[in-house]
Every structure is written in structure tokens, then in C-alpha cells.
Image (cartoon, rainbow, N blue to C red):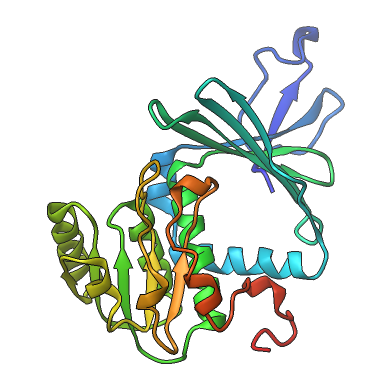
Length: 290
């Protein structure tokens, strides 16, 4: 619910918004005083998101929304795309009936100019705009949380080893999210930039307390991993990041994917090789392990 503020308004001098306006809790009403209630729309910057977000709470929220969709209580039409030359505007809307909210995420831009993200969240009961959020960092958090929900229900129980392909924001948020649902003993990271993968491994060791090593090839990163996270930008028409021939029995592979076929993360051999290819919200909310 949007924050609300009571303002006592005096009718002195016939001016309802004159000197008697007091930004304070309303006192006992008199014949000359009434209350105006303002609903305040939260405006949340990218810096606010970075400072205030808790990954465990985001994972819980994404899981709740997924189960709501499974129960037939989410209306989510196809995304809308507007393309002009090399600039894209995409709108993705949804209505969560159980939660009583609706809204949309938009992003616009291009590979050359960069992309801007925004989320508008509204209350269903009266249409009140609850929040406007810069969704740049939040998009990475949400993607990571979705990976964690899949891992929670589909990966083997117990301590895990992680093979990570990628060393950017999405790699960071995916690893942080998966760490909320599985204890991670150690891991390996590969990305094409040697300095970035070494720096990534160092940060994980220092900030998360996980034994993490940078390796020189992607297959070395995933060879001994029970969980594989593929979160990288392969570039326009670039090579895939993960190959089905590297898959081993019992390995849980999460690929954040792409909305464009020329940015594929996994090759065509991976799909037919895996034992289960599904989404966690297709499982029963009463018995999610089935």
C-alpha cells in the first residue's frame, strides 16, 4: 500500500490550503477543520534498489508470484514491442489477482546506446500508483531470484558446487540468489576477460566466504559443478557459452537465456540431453516437489 499522510486543513479566511495547513497527524476535528488524505507514490531510484534490496526476500516474492501464476491467478499478456531502426521499446504487463496489484515493466534503448528500465506498480482496488522503480539493477536481482526458485525445486539437496559462466551483474545476482537456497562449498568462474573473472572470484571469496577460482575455459568451470549458472552476453552472433557435451548426470543447469536467438547461451544439443526441462511454477503449489 502506498504511504498515506493525514494533513489537517483549516478553513480560516476561506482558503482551504492557506496558513492553517499543517503537515502533522490530524487533531480532533472542529466545524472549521477537515482532513485531506494524500496517497504518496514511492519513487525508487537504482541506488535505492541497490541499498535496500535483500536477496532472500526477492526470492520469496518471485516464488510467491510463480505459484500465483500456477494457480491461474495471474493475467499476463504477450509483451509489446515497438521497433524503430535500432531502438526498441518493450512493454511487459501483468495483473496478480491474489496479490491485488497490477503494473508493467518497460525498457527501451539499443545495444549501442544502452537500455533503460522502469517498473510501474499499481493497486488493483483503486488504481493508485504505488511505486515507480528504476529497474536496471532490479532486473538482475529478479533474474537471479528466478534461477534460485528453479534451483530450490529442481537441484539435488545438500551442499553444492557451482560452475559459473559469466562475470557481470547477472552472474553476481544469480550466484547470490542460488546461495540463499543451497549452501555453496566452492565454485569456478569463467568469462572471456581474464582480469574480470579473476576479480569476480576474488570478490566472491571476500564478500561471500566461498572458495571460488577463476579458470581459463568454460568446460573447466562446469566440469566438477553440481549446479551450473550460465549468465553471460555472448555478443551478436557469438559462440554459445555452454555445450550439451559438457553436461553430466545429476547436474542442474540454469541459463538465463535471451530474448533474441542470436544471443543464445546454450547450444541445441543441451535441450535433448537434459532429463527435465521445465519451470518451477508448473509444479503443484500444494506439493511443489512432484
